[in-house]
Length: 212
Ligand SMILES: *[C@@H]1O[C@H](CO)[C@@H](O)[C@H](O)[C@H]1NC(C)=O
Ligand SMILES: *[C@@H]1O[C@H](CO)[C@@H](O)[C@H](O)[C@H]1NC(C)=O
Image (cartoon, rainbow, N blue to C red; front, side, top):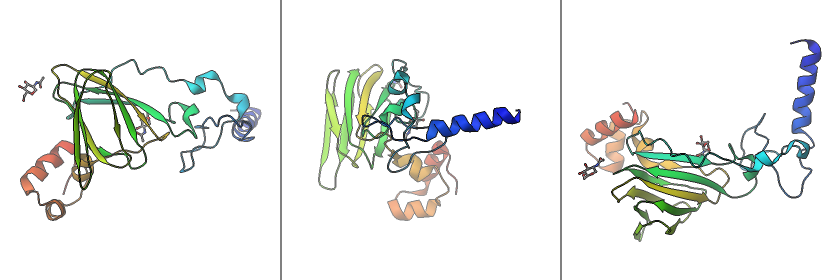
């Protein structure tokens, strides 16, 4: 690159990121130079904002279910829909193959709304005092309260499809099985802290790529 091109490039970068807050109505994420923070991304300068910043258009396609849980998750969060920045909202499409599930997990920072579109999905969440489970069919809507351990599984005889909405622009997801069995946490520690036998732990370390 010639010096003038380099100078113009940096000028473009700077004008893209400064004048950050020039709209009271929205703060489209500047995904270019920065990363997400607890208070979101900095705003993209309004003069670079276009309609495309408010749209994501590939949710009609099924997610890839070729994995042990036979589940395809397509997330639409601030990383691919910049206009979600600052709005406590995001979406996902969930495809669950026959006998598949969304494994036991929590979203520590988001409540989840689930809308079943196709097939039959059994859902549930667990609190220290209650187990709440329900069989959902197309048109049914369910809510998983923030932070609670929950699951979904395909209880029908065909593929199931649901859409989800989350009360965060970038909800985190903590899935129990890969957290327990997908790293080098020693088998003896898992035994002590779960009372599981060594054999199933070794088997699950094999599935999730853990060692030790
Ligand atoms: C946000 O969406 C992207 C693109 O779909 C995905 O790769 C990423 O895992 C999602 N973030 C979280 C925290 O789920
Ligand atoms: C789903 O599970 C049932 C019961 O275990 C089994 O009979 C059936 O073959 C399984 N189907 C698929 C596609 O895995």
